[in-house]
Image 1: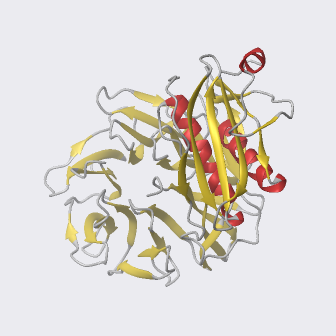
Image 2: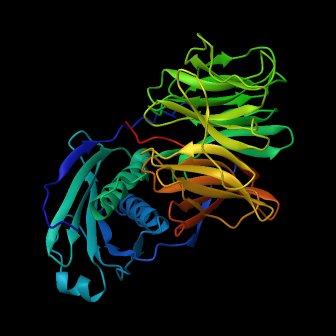
Image 3: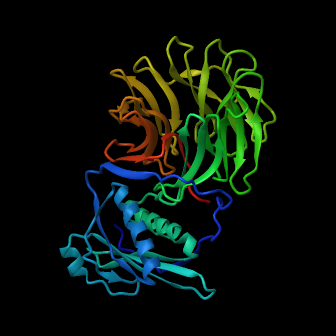
Length: 430
């Protein structure tokens, strides 16, 4: 950890969420169970925040919960000690408790009547301030302030951006005639319903700016691709050609989507503008080409195809041309998803009779199987590239599972109200 001290920075949190128009679901929130943790966790203590009691409890619990669920940190028992960002830490005492880092803060009122969440982070061993911030917010956004504080602590102690403030989209199958597209915080809380349908909803995909979701809906008794604006609730049809329209994936600049269309016979990959115009065919084969995913640099589209006799992963340049095979190990590899840095590829491979999450280092082509489950599908990277979220089955019911890219940290997310499927992890907040 760095010993560099930083002054408190004052940052405003929007009091109105971009999802404010959405309705909270009548069902339980996603619950997260930690099933594995990192080998060398950082011992950190989060003292009880001072200030207004109920608000402080909310923020303190969110910060602690985020850091603990990450599997990266070992939470040190604080013994109920309360501290604010202006307190002088008793460094020897915290060191004796086993803490390498300590965070403390408070919730107070700002000049305009809103609330202000303030915190400082300390390096216990070096007895130095690592950083701090102040977030101006409202009571309704206190959890968001807690997520932001947890993100800053995570980044200061690991050197990588935290993802606690990001969002996750997923589909909840409540019954055979009720499907709901949900959007929640990364910890599964604050779930909102973006769409309710009697027909299936599949393949949600976040735009790079986090303001839109593309997805496939069967509400018109056939698969149609929509783009849904989260701020306004309005949506547009971007692919409703003859036959099937499916598997939308955004280009890194947010201007185009790769989609799978069967309008010319067979399933082939096309690109369309985000408003649905300008459809251009990208692949030309007699096989089934599906599940496209842009590389982060926008130069390639990775996809699944059975053109070689069994489902394998290929890539093609964004201008078209000859496709190159990417996966060679095993007879069944599908659903390629590139990491944000473009160095790794998550996918689903068939192993020992089960369908399991695997990850390939694209430079060395080495493959690591990350799960021992049997029905994994729909991998999606966290925006910092450290975790991969998948849909799988436990006890015959659909749940979500998250695993770190090294396979050590594992979480399980479930809802008692129904099957959870089709996860998509949103980008960093802009």
